[in-house]
Length: 270
Image 1 (tube, rainbow, N blue to C red):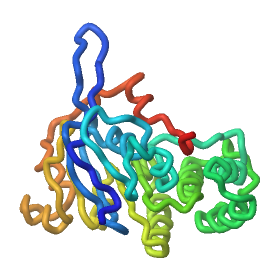
Image 2 (cartoon, rainbow, N blue to C red):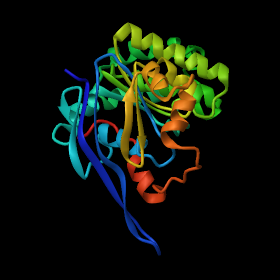
Image 3 (cartoon, helix red, strand yellow):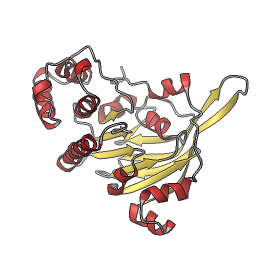
Image 4 (cartoon, rainbow, N blue to C red):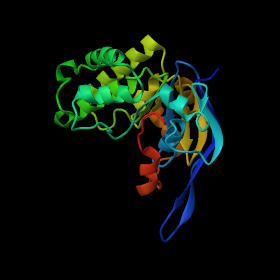
């Protein structure tokens, strides 16, 4: 049984303004993700990556098609889906006025964890991401890398079955990126967690089990890194990406109010 099953999933937006139009951000995509798989989801700006994640994590309703995450329907069983997923967004959603401990404790409370569970998990996770010595420091004082490590800890706080990583290392230096991937791979090995990844760092997808390439809201290819490189007769995933999606610079048409709506974080549904 697939951990993620997507069938003809679609999402449209009304683009306002002088040249008002309907934008098909996601256009009838279908794919599945296996249990314990590291699944890469790649595409240019505006291809539909973040909108897809927003639908799969119940932050945004589809306008067509269906999907199940961890065996639960993203529309009919929103509460159950949210209990099963962890999300790390492109932009930080931490409360910078709280301490690292308080951020994790609040997240655990939202997910109904007992006081004892929260304390044990917070201690474990802060040690794992090497922030145990900053547990009671206000997040406002943290560097970008420290905030990202804390967000990874928060995403793992409630023992998710599926972890969604939307540009998890964006803007970080190579050393911090390497450490973050050490944490992610450690958790994946120990808990057999399914990971759904989007990134613009193409070296990060070389270790994916499979990769789906999305462009203009459609899946245009899906296979293992080795088979994709063989298909396009190139040595790197960066070249696969360019061959599959073209060399032109893209603009992201989904912006402003619609983008904020599609990426708005939330706790468990009530």
